[in-house]
Length: 119
View 1 (cartoon, rainbow, N blue to C red):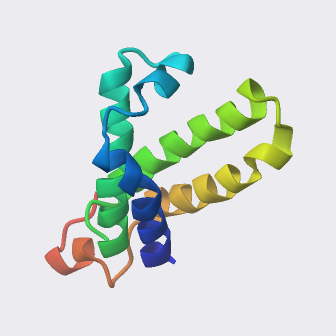
View 2 (cartoon, rainbow, N blue to C red; view 1 turned 60 degrees about the vertical axis):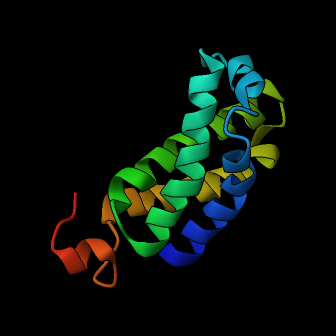
């Protein structure tokens, strides 16, 4: 599950990493200023964080960062776009998966376990 979740995050973040400042207006519309900083952080969290989650390196901090991003998407769909649960359901599921890995870590088949260091 960790590998699939990480690779899904990488796929979702690929477009953002190719244009790391492209989401600046969107993140500013949610109240995150300066948009260029948060847009870059969003791109790195999704793409690099996804890679890290997939291989199990710095799993807990990467998953926690992804959990935070996904909770913002829950807020965006539920409150800002007024879609309620139906619009934010997928983000809630993905946030739950990231929270699981933020708490549980990568498992014994992760890079973290192989190097003997887990946060």
